[in-house]
Length: 105
Image (cartoon, rainbow, N blue to C red):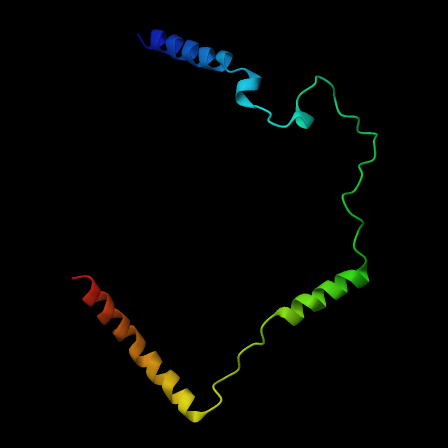
């Protein structure tokens, strides 16, 4: 019985694999990449899409990106801001839990 099940399973798998043709598995929508039956010529030097960037251009791009970044925020500037942040740190968790529990009803 087990042998019959193995043969049936193998034949079913073989049928599935044999019924899948390459066009069904890999349909090409672009005519440029369609399989024309030839191999690519690897001796042809590829043409770059754009000229390589020089090191001075790279440095200019890096500086432009760094200039566009927002300035880092420093520590609290006043005593009242520091007190506010400490109080917020102590009460924020409890206040958030209270709001979550109130909205769940």
